[in-house]
Length: 222
Ligand SMILES: C[S@@+](CC[C@H](N)C(=O)[O-])C[C@H]1O[C@@H](n2cnc3c(N)ncnc32)[C@H](O)[C@@H]1O
Image (cartoon, rainbow, N blue to C red):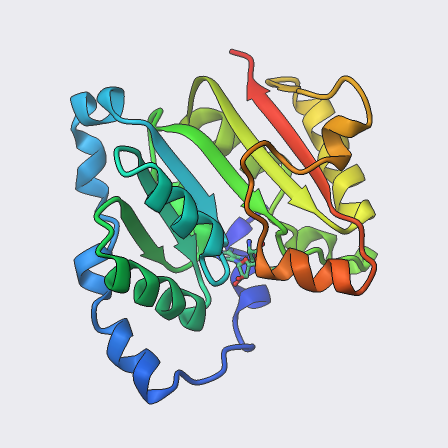
């Protein structure tokens, strides 16, 4: 399956940037993720490196990066307005530990070869609830294999969603994959938000519409 087909799913819903957002977008090169960063093995081993896929407006990555200035946070997002919103927060607060990759996360992952991340976050991915759209979901057999490849030994992967069918889909694919442990011992483990988790704008909107969020946590086994 060509996961880049997902680009179809994220294209076409971009609203144009406001003048202010256009201005702030110009600062992207200062914070853009550069793959050469990952050629330095010492850098990878010495630092705690986090990846957020589809950060939306960037509330979570921003708050975490501000709280933990010695960790490195890499965010991938296709949505230009979201990138501009995160850039605004980074500039205003003078953060130095966030790198942004603006574009399709599947393409980003394809270009990575090696073990880099202590944690990967996929919070509220586009749910694509209709059966005929399931192939557009971010979580697929291939993306799970890729995530397994790039996460450090014993590293964690967090996936949340308020779409029950996405949660069942994810659990079933992880069960088949067998390279991650699902860290859940009682229903509280998937019903209660992660420890120290801040919540996102998309999640809040769902809660207002009475959609219940679920929080999955996986650990890489081998
Ligand atoms: C439902 S929103 C959730 C945003 C955020 N994680 C949150 O919880 O508020 C899903 C986000 O993933 C982004 N996205 C979806 N597919 C993507 C892809 N293939 N590459 C990069 N970003 C993607 C969308 O642009 C959107 O911002």
